[in-house]
Length: 322
Image 1 (tube, rainbow, N blue to C red):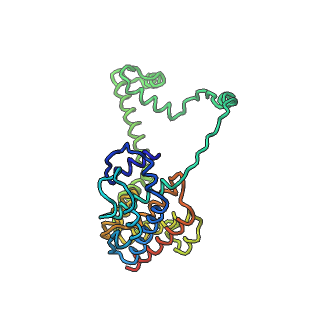
Image 2: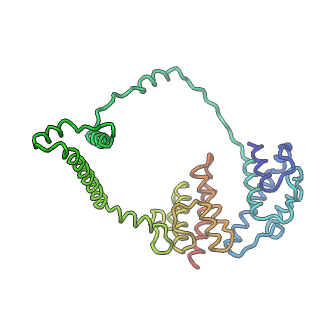
Image 3: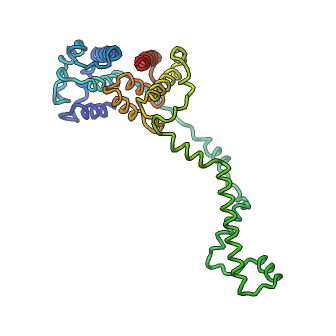
């Protein structure tokens, strides 16, 4: 896991040697530096909520972090010092790396007993007998046989019926072809009538209009109908997902993001930052919390979810008051 962290770290800041020793990196990202990074990001988030035009400066807003970085020797891993011209993106990346290094994971191995596996497989792998063809499948096979060039003779029942009518042999093939065409037209007419009865045209029209901006109101999800006070009283998982759905509903109503359900979270974030003209730290943190809750091996703890939900609520109120 740690070599992978070095590669990620180098991809952001530029490494001199990917194969450098990992131990200095572990010592560099100490608990003191980790706490300074956490406090810095919390201070930036509060400052951004108070002033949407907030511009980050390391020396001004995070002096403790700047002092911590000034004492660290990161020259084996990066090309430039971190105590000057450090952007907010770099601080967030450092916090992610530090959080991973300062987290200890325990793994367990389990043994498996395969003695009863064969008896289980013998009872489950039972070959089913081939079923008789349905009437629909027989009809399709009969239609396929009509266009088989190797089949030149008519079915026996049709030959007997035509013989009773005393039709000349020259007209037999023409009558047979006309019956096939008539049956095909009848079959297509039935299909078209069923599709019209099912309202396929209205469904296609609604589907084409679903992703247009500004002409239709997005559907109200159950979370979007709840108040923020009700969402903040939900359990941890439902709380962060409810905050996510509530905020998306608000942003879509204000035309700050497209009403397009196919967009990913990061595409929505890009659209929001273009609409508001700046980086949206609260929305970025909400996305990370939702993705960690849904897909992460270790979901966020209760305190982190509470903090993210409260910040999202204040962020939504500031947008709603515009």
